[in-house]
Length: 133
View (spheres, rainbow, N blue to C red):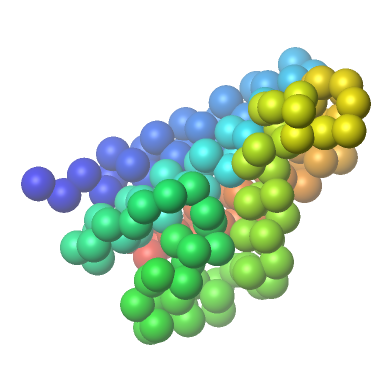
């Protein structure tokens, strides 16, 4: 049974949660939810193609796609690899105080970071959704 549609649905729900979190001032959590949404969208795409992807690295999830699928995705999302790098950099420091020199993640992430993460994540999830259609 192919559950790619379920994974994409959850990816979109994660982006909705990211927006709610950003609106409530929880920018660190919004950034993390953006990463999670893109991770789940890549899981959907891999499942749609009959393969699996492991780990949390978005760049790796992209590089593990078949060349034609990766090329189509890159053609539909400007600066895709840079966007993935930005989102990958949010995976740990948005959650763990010991990944930062001092303070809690909530002290280090603000509106600009969450808006940026949402912009990148929406572009990628939308392109993956189009690839699944």
